[in-house]
Length: 159
Image 1 (spheres, one colour):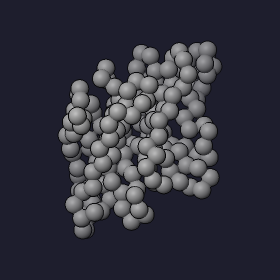
Image 2 (cartoon, rainbow, N blue to C red):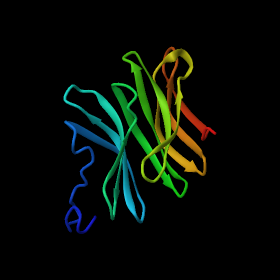
Image 3 (cartoon, rainbow, N blue to C red):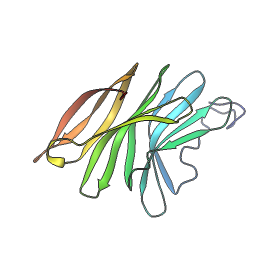
Image 4 (cartoon, helix red, strand yellow):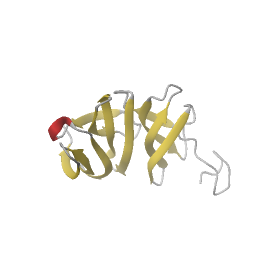
């Protein structure tokens, strides 16, 4: 609830992806100063863009997008004093997709990015993320020849 910005009622929506044809918020974290949402937006042609939007209690809304391919989706986000980490999948070709982790600063400026292509070049993706300093733990999946496998990885922010 954000009195004064989007109304005083408890059910007033925050406009995630309001400037796109369609949007899907998959994860949200609220802090004392802002609400952070991760998900994706679709344009009129159906291209998905992974998006993180910040809705500060004071000041303008902020947005970041992965901007890597036509099928990028963010599924997990975590916010700490060190910044913001987000995970999901990015699709370089229609036949495969890869897991990504991106570190953002509080203004949603991208600092670092890691992309993981698992064994067998099958689809991979991150569904949830937990941040501890410059280290994140990602839960997701990786697909080999026959089926999806559980994936839990620890990543340290690149130097």
